[in-house]
Length: 131
Image (cartoon, helix red, strand yellow):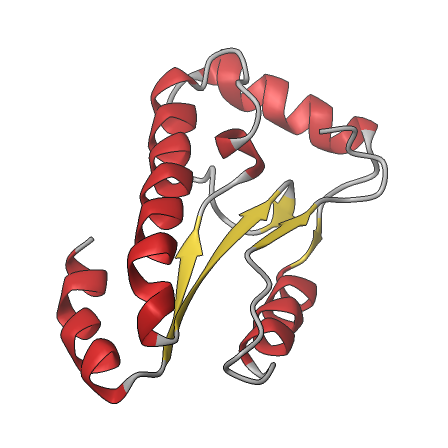
């Protein structure tokens, strides 16, 4: 929210801008052992919808990115062994995550649309990830 606050007034004044809000598939589905994480991602979805309604008259876009399993270091700091083991087992069962480069390209594609067009949400997962 600090980042949004830092740029919001300028975007409104210019009548142009795009906020890319990073969420997760966990903002769409609750996962065992991820209660707090899921809650924070649901918050991202809710605040993004509210911001989108507030900013649309100013031609400012709000896009939510909700990736599934992506090949990143996101869980390098997870201390709970059960949670980490479950995540790794799930990732292996679906053949691994997808490259962060693919996600980056989607972000760029959505951003480069004309300002009068918006992809409101991007949900991307490995094909074998059921949700």
